[in-house]
Image (cartoon, rainbow, N blue to C red):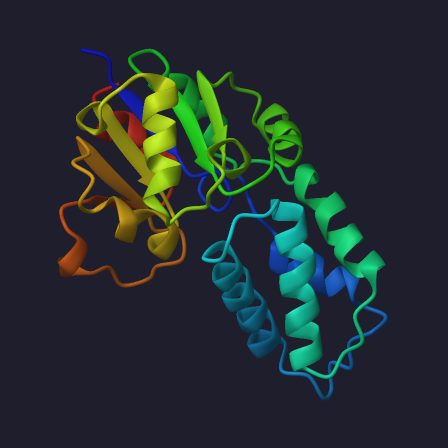
Length: 221
C-alpha cells in the first residue's frame, strides 16, 4: 500500500522568518523605545490565524489585512507598500539546514508532499529553495480553504488519491496541523517541536522531534 509523508511548509520545512522580516519592512516606522515588539508580533500572528478562519481569500491578501490590523492596533499608519514588501519577501525564505538531506532520505521509501496555507505562486520559489522534488505541493489556493479547516486536508487526500490511513503528517504548527488532524484517522503524526513548546496529552498519539534530522530513522529509512 502506498504511504505518503505530508508536511506543513512554513515553520516545518521553510525557515519562515516572518517576524524579523516584518520588523525590517517597518524599520522606518517603528519606535522601538515605545513599542512592545513581542506583543506586536504576537498580535500579527493572532490576526493571521483569525483571518484564515474566515471566508477564503488569497494568502497575499491575508498578509496585507492582518498586518494592517496589527499596525492599527498599535497606533501605526499602514501603507500598502508595507504589505507588498512582506509578500515579496516570503518566496525568498529557504529551508532549515537539515531539511534537504532528511527529505532525500525519506524519498527512498515514501512519496512526499506539502500541504500549505499559501498561494501557488508564493510557495513555488520556496520549494525551489529546498531543492528536493515533491510528489505533490498542495496549497490553500487549490483547496479553497486554509488549515485548520478539514476541507484543506480532505482536498489533499483526494488530490493524492489516498486514504488518511496512508498518510504520515509532519508539522511544526500546533493549531494549524496537529489539533485538526487528531481525528482524521492518519497512520501517524509527527510534531517537529522546533521551539521547545509543551505538548498535550489530549492530542496524542504523536511522535515528537526537535527538527527533521531524526525523521528518516523514525520512519525506517
